[in-house]
Image 1 (tube, helix red, strand yellow):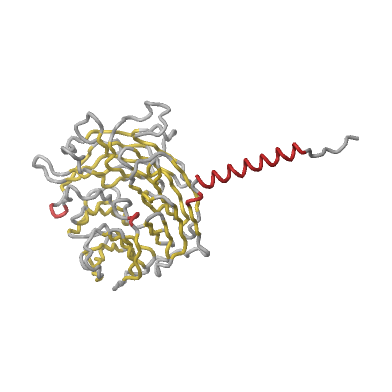
Image 2 (cartoon, one colour):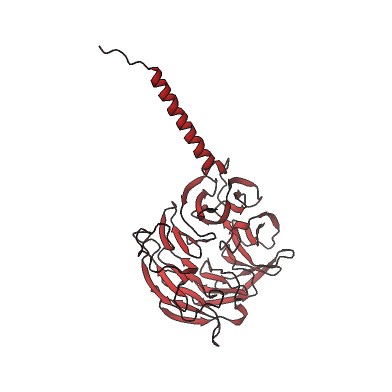
Length: 417
């Protein structure tokens, strides 16, 4: 029978040394890692799903307001709401709030600056800036604030986020990525962080000016070196290899010539599965117009933009938002509605302050001194709701959650009910 093994003094010293090494490594990981600078406080009880409004109110008053500079209209198309929650984002904090009271239900805070936040898949997708740009991404469950997925990759120092319901797009000036709901990257376009195959990208050194995506097409407007005008390119949002873009078509738009010290003010307005609408500023005596391109980037038609909707050259790039049977495009001078399938013009509202949002089958459009209640089919205003905004005169982007109207006014979110 073998004698039982006994621990020697050497065994104890080795075990103690291993424990010290593990403790030191864990301490280093804690003090240098992301966890030390992160505070996550999920909701004690999930916020309930908001019930859709049965009718449009006849009066609205301010319920609450909160700072939310990271969701302003230069970073994300509309205020960030999920099915149950209004999300505000300022400094390094993302907060989930009760729509009616504004009370904080959950929070997620990091010792990094927020680049932007967007809502998709009933979650809030928050992007933070570190030494690699706007690279650290966290997906937060809307009702609870629990982290559901995270990712990190190379990015530009500032990005614009958008969601088409299937993918979230993060676009900077030199690089664009698309992510699916588990935060897996489906497309990498432009400047690449790890160019394993130098020829994987169709062009290099381009400036990405504008983009729009659907579940089957991603459209990007870019200005490339040695090309006299901007280029419209249509891509597969989820090619077989995320680092090897698959083009459906690409064409230089001769009217979109950059200025002496700035790129063209042309921009993508909206995209469907088969049509892309592109704003083409006035040039050489031609008026401002919208070009319509098919799913291979070939122009099929165009229409003239009314003079009372002409954007100013330095106005921010507002994409159109889907509103029932139409897209509504805020030009800075008013709203142009486009058919949701063909992107042809259907009606317009000069003087509007934002693209609006749908409640109870009607479009609520922010206008000076209030909100206009608009028939989606005709664009006719059926009533007006007075709103006191003080001295703030726009622009205003809106969202609706239940019977609450949420307005993004510059760096602030204001809830009306």
